[in-house]
Each structure stands twice: as structure tokens, then as C-alpha cells.
Length: 88
Image 1: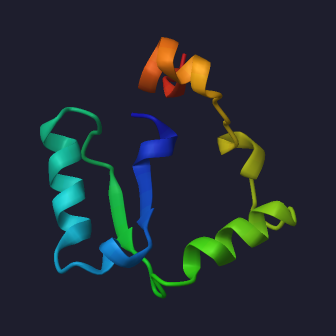
Image 2: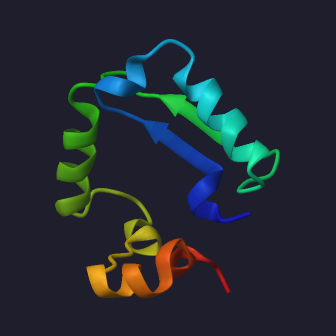
């Protein structure tokens, strides 16, 4: 499994829909994208947590941030798609 997909934090307005973390976890497993070790959590403050996390990340306060920092331009995404996140 990809480390990126082992722990997912849902945030934003739609993450507050009842059962959303469980649904995402189930659908990712059904599609074979993750193994049994996936952990999908809902945000404590869905309105502001994404902003706070991005602010901490930009200030260098996120431990191991460089490990998951991966930016893809549009041309690369159109050529490779989600495979640009594959480990290996």
C-alpha cells in the first residue's frame, strides 16, 4: 500500500456528511486501491482544518512534509494520470 493512502483526513464541507469517512474507506477497498490498513478520519473542524494544515505546512511545521510533498503540473497529469503517485 502507498503510505499516502494509509491515512486520509477528510476536511471541508462535504466531509461532514454522515458516514462519509466510512463510505470512502469502503469504496477505496472495493476498488482495490488500498489494503486493510487504511485509516480514514473526519476532521475535527471541517471548516478550517485544511487551511490550518496548509498554513503549518507552508511554515515548515509539518513533520516529514517533504516525504509527501509532490506537485504535478497539468501536462504531467494528463500524460501519466494518477500513476504519477505510484511508489516504486
